Amino acid sequence: MTSKDVAIFERCISVGGVALFPADTVYGLATEPESREGVDRLYKLKGKDPGQPAAVMFFNRELALAALPELQGRTREAVLRLLPGGVTLLLPNPRRRFPVACGPDPDRLGLRVPDLSGELAPLAAARWPVLQSSANRSGGRAVRRLAAVEEDIRRGVDMELDGGVLPGAESTVVDLTRYEQSGEFEIVREGALPAGEVAARL
Image 1: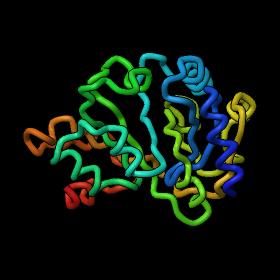
Image 2 (image 1 turned 90 degrees about the vertical axis):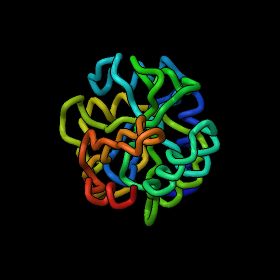
Image 3 (image 1 turned 90 degrees about the horizontal axis):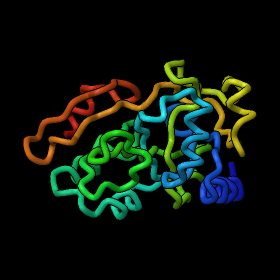
Image 4 (image 1 turned 45 degrees about the horizontal axis):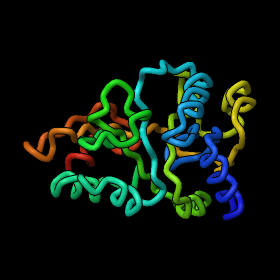
């Protein structure tokens, strides 16, 4: 992967295209978070219920925090402790940002910032956030090799980025919506980051 590949990826996202790309966990599908057409295409490729939420991914933690300035002290500190990495954080969203990604609950936003190193390092230069979901049929197994993505999904995207063989475990989902007030958090799905490590960091 090169800086030119990343520039093409950003252009694709900026016009509401759908891209197949590697993260630090599994291969994913990405589109512009505010593009209803792009999101509808992504969901159709996955066979995903259009009412379900999806996470917004930033490729740089500082850009993510700048985009969510309303995050309060304890929650902001949790973001710093857990990201970047194989975690999706469910955060309070009082400004109702990225409503297309939030699905039926606009007061809660899923946030991802991958840990990009090695072959994936060029992606860290991407400044355009994406709505992302794993590149598999809804309910199916996540994919760690580009060649293993279903052919109809590959035919349906506008571009592909090959990041080689990925770890293969989906992100751990951590609900931090009550963390600011009470310090409570919930592991909604255990994945790439073990629950014990999440607890230790928090």
